[in-house]
Image 1 (spheres, one colour):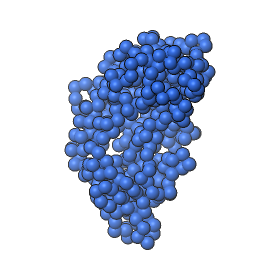
Image 2 (cartoon, one colour; image 1 turned 180 degrees about the vertical axis):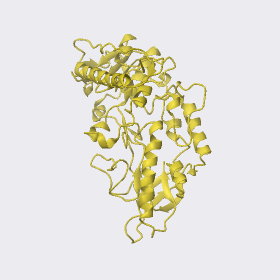
Image 3 (cartoon, helix red, strand yellow; image 1 turned 90 degrees about the vertical axis):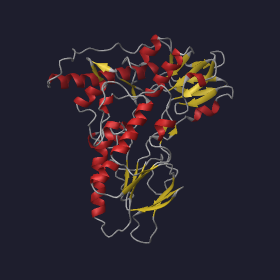
Image 4 (cartoon, helix red, strand yellow; image 1 turned 135 degrees about the horizontal axis):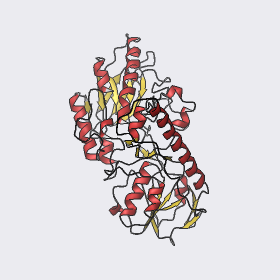
Length: 412
């Protein structure tokens, strides 16, 4: 967004509560790599220029990449500047214009971009309150590596990207792992010799606009893809985990007297994930039949269905099973506790239309799932969103030339 605002000659500042790329520094586990190939980190005026376009960045490499981008575009970033309140400026005028209160002073601005992301607070279900005190718990945001865990077995709750990778790593460290899986999105890392992201990019899936989705609320809440940026490009799915000895159970339904209760829907949700994966592969095959392909693309094929035992356990005694730790990989929600504006829905999310906050003219949202297109939460997608929203922002400012407030605020 800063790149586009500069291109439009809009005076602005970017506020960051910590260091640049703060969440990558402080809220990721040690071995995590980006889920998208290096070539796919395409930002306005910047991109990957190394010798391994099909590799996956480590966290340190991701931090370096973002630091370099900020340097190259001369982004006006103010680090260690925490926003404590965003509100209308209360100047007695038309009610628009904003006051941004920080621990380093207060700013007035004509427009504001909220780019604080969707993953600020780990979402842990209320049933966790029923766990016995002897069971240690942590979230995927708190997890760093297996060495920090208690001795004994681990129950990983959640089978999207984080849960499957963490379950894989913990099991390979020598601990017994049980994985509780609800709804999930199964995809292969590679298909017909090409990365799954190559197919989604080439076939136009990632560019699908939010305005063409029948149920955008549903689409914005679909779990993340079961993907990992492993150097060997192996597929991470429930089959790969059960093959190495991870025990598979259904969605956590509750805890009672030291026993974990699980849903009986595991076979159904796995069958649905298989069905949706094959539909996606069909989309790729149809696109391939109508377009010229690189020489290294292979013939179509399909993957084995998810293997689920006939009667997965519905109840596990945590003590008898030797489970000492529960790791919640159950998603996140944004933190808008600092937002003093009437723009939140009943679930605590900002009401918006493709990132334009109609309830607060001059306010914009960035970095949320399926904000304007399917790739909105990827590094590769935010540039296009910023292009669209910066254009709207410019039109808004031009329509309000009487305002004298500066600069525009890009809070990240």
